[in-house]
Length: 177
Image (spheres, rainbow, N blue to C red):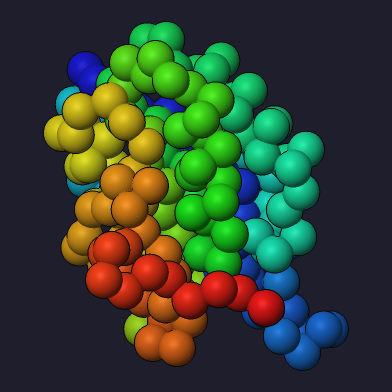
C-alpha cells in the first residue's frame, strides 16, 4: 500500500465561514473530513496539521518549518502533498525546491480559489488530483491545480484571471507592487 503524507498549512482550501467575523477565516483543518469522502484503495494518507494560515500571513520561518516537515516525512512516503494558500504558494515551493536538491519523491503543492464546502469550490478536485499526481510524478516540486501540473520553477499566479500560468521567455510574470 502506498503512503502519501499530506501536510496541511491552511489557505483558502481550509477556510470556513465565521458568523462572528462575517467572513471566511482559517480556524481549523477541514482536509480530513474531505479525505473521508474519497475512495482511495491501496492508499494510506497520513495527515499532518502543520499550521492553518492564510498564505499572505506566511513568514520565512513558516516556510522553513514546512521545509523541515518535508525533510522529516520524505523517507517512506510515495509522495508528499502540501495544502497551501495560492497567493504565496509558488514562493514556498521555490524555498522547498532550493532546500531539497536531492528529493526522492514528488512534493505537490495545491490550494483552492474557493474554500472546501462552498458552492463551486475547486478544493476537492485539486486535493484529489494532487493525491494522484503524488503517486505518478517523478521526484521534484510541483503545483497541481485545476487539472494542470506545473514544475514550481515555471509557474506564476495571474491574479487578473485567478489562475496559474506557465512562465515563458516572451511574457514574464507581472511584478507585484
